[in-house]
Image (cartoon, rainbow, N blue to C red; front, side):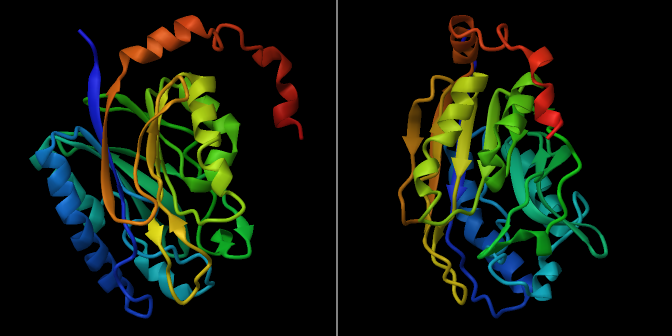
Length: 288
């Protein structure tokens, strides 16, 4: 019997003027996502993920302390508590990328993972934090300290990589070694230098590691920063590196795909990358 898992990813534009208080952003963005969550539930989606820091704009072009107010505790905060209720209601695994307050003054870019019965399974904190013009993330996020966990959900073994992480193959391999069958990569990335990499790197991770990847991006432009267009194009890619479903470039959208997890074994039995690895020769990776 094949193991088919119906997965959904949501790409949305920011809905709240950036001069509004953080709580208005949180409430407004959750309200904007609710129809898509309902749509996913009606379609029988079993695993659902949103874009990076989905409860607000991508605020990292600024260095404004105001946005610390968007952070909330995981899982005690209001967003996780609501998503735990919705996960149980819809019998749906949910990957919830939000701004996390670990303690006053210590904040992470995090994704919570909630099982289909509403149980909080744990979190992944973004490990690789950029610090370049337009992406002043070190001002807002402490580098993650969760390593690369894989969560055994009701439907699949799930890993998370967040946005800039995707440029680093090492963590992607760690997720595969830990048993990930599907890796979700919620992102906020704009047209320009890295756009051509969007459909190269993550298929490469899927091929090299023999798993599915779900790549999520937001859409639209966000004033007043206007660092560029968030170009959507969220997609699913299979272990052969084939993009099997892709969203539009410029509109809010729920993208759904059926993932046949039996394909993982078929691909790995053909391409024996795990068998032929030589970790005894890779010491240089941790020496430089």
